[in-house]
Image 1 (cartoon, rainbow, N blue to C red):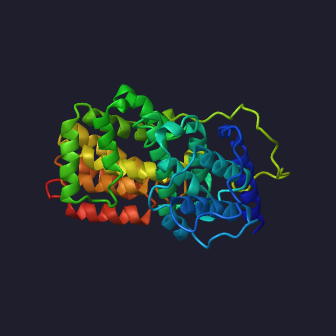
Image 2 (cartoon, rainbow, N blue to C red):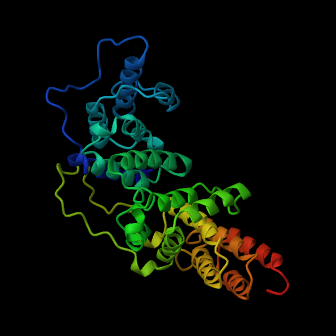
Length: 372
């Protein structure tokens, strides 16, 4: 309990640390809630009720709804948001906390995704800050985390026109390393579409329809094949991944919850290796790269399988990238040459992950007799 409390206080301090990134309110703007009354129905009712929901959820000073289903109902259709609604929602969030399962980030993400793009100017830094805070919060995970950060990336893409950074996000680790290798190819819409297709793969082995779509997208972009290869190369070159330097900017206000002892839930270090979202991306890229039948492609897929299936750190059971490992293993089964059998044999000896080990053993049994 003490650890969880200390962690939550630490996250509150981190949230207030980006309050200075929130744009200013318009001249004469006021707190949009509470209000004495508002229309009983219609778009303005939806808008004001959603803002009321946000305030109550985060501050506990006003009644809040019991879950996010009400917010979905309120915002299922585009609501006539004002730019100051987003400013206010972010200010409330920055001064409070993300909330259980990231609930505090729901409304800012909805507003940012629905607000006319011409009103989003100046919001990109703070949207990235919320994005990173969600990824750093240990209580936000799985489908909910993907939904929240996906909504923010959509807003950032609308605002900046950047096609790749929302997929290869981050200031350290795999994301910036891959962006650096991509270079100008990252601005190519057709190449971006290939990367976007990669993250739609939800299992180790794709359907035939998914592969047909991948082949069509790959063929439509002259740069797609090399882009996929280089992103996979960035995944392998862990030693070149950038490490984030401490932020030298002063905080707008001191941490209201100073801690005498070190935070028992420290920020994830690069040796955690890979964000879940990037593991999903590499999984799909393995199958797109497998459309290349060359021996060189087989070697690269083998390297991905071995690196992804290796322990995250000495003695750990978790693989470095379990989703990517499973996909890379599957791509090797039907490829010619001695490389698949050699890779799978080494991986069977090196991995400590039971799911990866089981998949490797099944793959070895399925290899053609001429490969084993």
